[in-house]
Length: 167
Image (cartoon, rainbow, N blue to C red):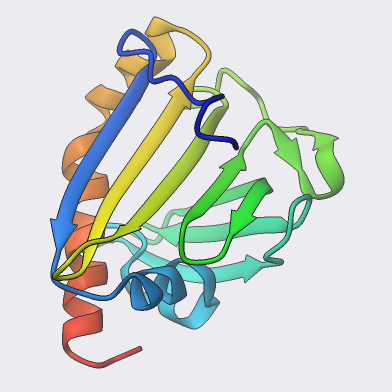
């Protein structure tokens, strides 16, 4: 997604921004290598128990999260943009191969598009995660589910994993 095309709309988009002292390349790996993503992708005590990544536009981005009670929550989407060490863009509105999703758009908070931007800084990485929603109601539902807390905790887990050398 070209930077000039992406304009944040505060009415329907959620943004999480952090600057951390870990290299861009390791943050990228954590997002693009299934065994690494499974270690941090959802906030504890939830777990990511399965992950499939075909890292190319049109490729699959699939995860299965598990609650502490054992409830499994699958997620499937399609990559729209893959710029190594810079940006990942995917959407739940499409399945792999750009096929329209069979999921119920009213489930949870509906379809959304995710963007992860990575920028090298003098000491590490500027990380910006954006969840783009269809309307204000979907944004509100995602926010009330704990977008900032959940995505923030997951990112903290990503950074901790990198610093512990578990990549």
